Amino acid sequence: MAKIISASRRTDIPRYYSRFFAERREAGDVEFRNVFGGKSVASLRRKDVHGYLFWTRFAGPFVANLQALREERIPCVFQYTITGYGEDLEPHTPNTGEAIEDFRAVSAILEKPACIQWRYDPLVVSDTYDVGWHLENFARIASGLRGATEVVNTSLIEPYRRTILRVDDATVRYRPIDPNRHKWAARNRPDLLQADESVHRLVSDLYDIADQQRMQLRACSNRELDLPASQCCSAEMFA
Image (tube, rainbow, N blue to C red; front, side, top):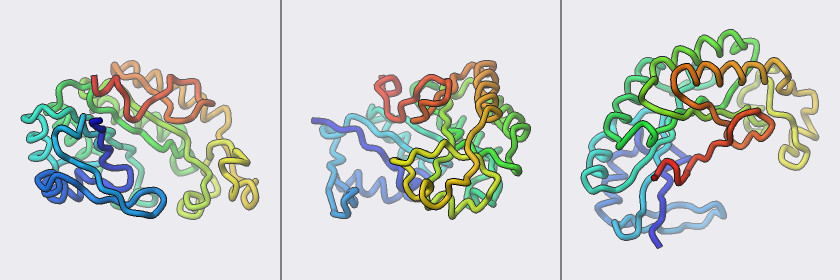
């Protein structure tokens, strides 16, 4: 059975591993570490691949691969992250202007704008990145991407141990703590600020801004948000 290859939530293959991707496609397979710590092998032969889902923040180095896939009529879609945060949160991210330009270039190569979705994810609301900052930042990016995509996905920052220790900001408003899902936070950080009514109003305002730019804002695995549910790898995109 042909498979969809997700390349990759673990690293930015289009940005950092363009040559590796081309070499493995030519070889016909790729070895990877599975979630249990062992090694697995996936076939990249044409008959075994239905299509590719690429995750990236900058796909400029990947253009030759993308054009080759299009010439071979292999379906490919993108989840492309642009958030606009500063180096305190994202020290190795291209600046927003470059990312918007690159996003539009990728969209122009694909079959249509429905093949690439913008990820404004995660939604980090804090004293530094407050409601006013997000409204201005989101509107600027959405305006720059108008016509290049139809969907924008978002989610609240999750109170995982690794995330909390990395962010190290007591003013961040996290997704509500679920004792079963966020066990470390429930035991050690019950004092964490959680998303309140102001955050939900912000999400509603972001939905309206997206709508003005002919996009639909969707929630990624956040049922508590009053938004349509997103699917990172959907039949809708590959159709």
